[in-house]
Each structure stands twice: as C-alpha cells, then as structure tokens.
Amino acid sequence: MNIHQPMSRRDSLKRLLQISGTVAAATFTGWSLDGPRSVWAKNEKRKFIIEGLGQTKGYAVKELTQKVFEAAGGITRFISRGDVVVIKPNFSWARGPNLAASTNPEVLESVIELCYNAGAKKVRIADNTIHEARRCFAITGAGMVAKKTNADLIYPRSSLMKEMKIRGDRLDVWPVFVPILEADKVINLPVAKSHSLSILTLGMKNWIGAVGGRRNVLHQDIHQTIVDLAQFFKPTVTLIDAIRIMTKNGPSGGSLSDVSMKDTLILSNDPVAADALAASLFNRRPEQIGFIRLAQKRDLGTYDLQQLDHKKVVL
Image (tube, rainbow, N blue to C red):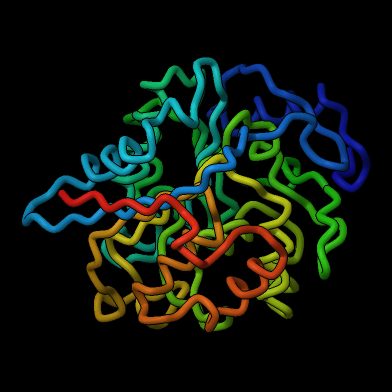
C-alpha cells in the first residue's frame, strides 16, 4: 500500500505487529487523517513544573526520576491501568550516553518501570533516528533498557509513517510516526543540548523525531516548524533529561569536552515552561530562543514560571 493513501485501522495494526518482531499484540484507539480520535491525555488545567536536582555525591538517577514524579502527584496522575504508553526519547545519534547526545538510559528505564507499576498494559519506545536505528539503539543503551524492562522498541520504517494534517503555519500535511498516534498516553523524554540552527534542542524540538518525510526541509524555517509540531503533538507530560547536557557542537557532538554535568530533571505538563526552564541551564533566557517565544505567542504554554506550581526536589 502506498503510504500516501489512506490506511485502514486494520492495516495499520497489522503493520505495527510486523516491526522486527518487537511489538506484542495490543488494543489501539484508532485515528483519522485529522488526528487521533481520543486525546492522549486529560490535560489538567493546573500547570506544574518540577525540578529534580541530584546534589548528593553518588545520588541515583533512577531514584531522582521517581522523586520528580512523586512531587507531581505520582505516576498514576498521568498513567492509568491498561494504558498503552509511548515514550518519545531522543536517540537520533549513535553516541554513547556519556556524550549527552541521547536520552539518559537510566532515566528511560525508571520511567518505563513507573508506567508498568501504574498498571500500563504496554510501554513502547519510539524515535525516528537520524543514524541507522539499530546502531543508535545499541550504542545509546535503548536496546538494553527495552530488553531489561520488557518495553517494545519500535524500529522506524516508512510503512509506519502516516500523512496527517498538522495545520501549522508552515506545515500542513506531513508523515507522522504511527505508534505515537496510537498510544493512550505519550511521555516526551528529550535530552537537553545545543543545536547549530535552533540554538537549543529540548522538549518541543524532540517532535522532529516523531515524523518522517524529508526532514531536512523542516530545518529551513526551524523555529516555526518546531512550534507547528508542538501544536500537533500534545504529550501527557514532558520530562527533560539534563543529567548531562551538550553545551556546544550540538546536536550530535562527539566529544566529552562538549558535555556538562547538570544532574537535573525537569518535569512539566506545560511544554513551553519545561523548555524555558531547561534553557536557563545554558544561561539562555526563554525569549532568546525563537521557538519558545513563538510557542508562547501561539498559546501552547508559558515561560512565566510564576504562573505554575513550581517545586524543587533535591536528592
């Protein structure tokens, strides 16, 4: 079937179940060209932002991850029994975790465990990588985490991209990664790092790894593209991994001299606020970052953190 033609729900499910033998049978919610029929998350009106700070020598990253969710009311505030959860990390580059080009595997492992503890039916890891996916998943530690936690690791392929109406200022119709559409809940789990075009890549830019097509075209008006995608994708929650951040030569890096230890996690149900707080780790004000400024103007959230319930967790 041509991926540019409408795909039936049955065909999409069949294709999902053929992904390198990694996807177990599950019940999906269904979607149309206009988007998912059911909302991923019941977005609560009360916005919050949690800073998790690992300040004790030898602190446990997994414990810090658990603590930030506890401070937000617990994982069951976001994940319900029977949910199919998709976690969208950033594993675009075949780089080891110590180089801060990819989501910290310990953070990913902890989030998966929390979802299963909340009664999730299945947890899936989905990212459309830039380097070859098998290498990325092996070198970043994603494959190891998936095996250890029994999460499904989704390998990107063109048959899993479905053209959807983005309805953005720049993007109208664009191929979107089907497993993300089919989830009951989606957790955005990016790593914080520098970027040669957008200055930073944080939570909202992470959605470029949730689409297919000619992604080089998306970089031609990158700030507007990021905001268009952020308007389309509405995660249940965003958790920004800033345990290690890449301060220069992003987004791929490749040298330990590019890396700074921040020992920080940022959890929020406001994607603009999450990126705004993460930007401060790079000594950047949110209004200096084009996509953060545009996203607030689009009413996708706020970078005025005083409007949110703001808590700090220190470990």
